[in-house]
Length: 221
Image (tube, rainbow, N blue to C red; front, side):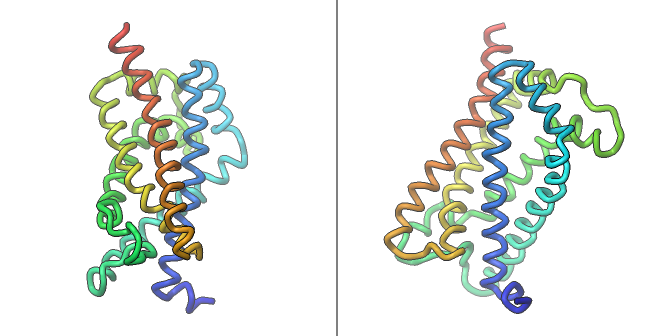
C-alpha cells in the first residue's frame, strides 16, 4: 500500500481525491455564502452555525489538510513532469485535455491560491479564526462582507478569482474522475460536459454575491 501511494500514479490519485474533496467543500461554501444575498439575518445565522457547530469546527483542520495535500502534490507532480513528460492530471491524447486550462493547471492553481489568501484575510481571519484562537470575532459578519464587496475594485478582484477557478475546475473535475478510474472514451466527453456545468454553477453562484453587494450598496445607494 505504501508503495502505491509513493508511486507517480499514487501521487496523482491523492491529488485527484483531495481535489474532489475540495470541490464538495466549494458547493457547501457557496450555499452558505448565498445566504448573504437573501438577507443580513440569514447570513449572520449561517455564520453563527459555522462558528458553533462542532462538526464544522472539526472539519476546518481537515479542510486545511486537504488544501495542503492538494498543493504539495500539485507542486511535486509539476516539478516531476518538467523533468519528464508534461502530464498533469490523467490525460489522454485523444481527448480535449490539451486545452489551455489543462496546460496551465498549476498556474491557475497559484492564482486561485493567491486570491484565497486575500479572501481568508478579509473574512475567515476576522470570523472563525478568532473563535479558534480566543480572539474577538466580528459581531456582524454581514457588515464585513458588505464593506468589502460593495467596493467595486474588490468586487472585480473576486469576480476574476471566481472565473480563474472556473478554468481550474473545468479541467480538474473531469480529469480527477478520470484518474480515479472513469477513463473510457465513452465517458470522457460526458465528464467534460459535467465539469463545465459544475464549474459554471460554482463560478456563477459566487459571482452573484459581489455583483449583488456592489450594485446594491455602491451604484444604487
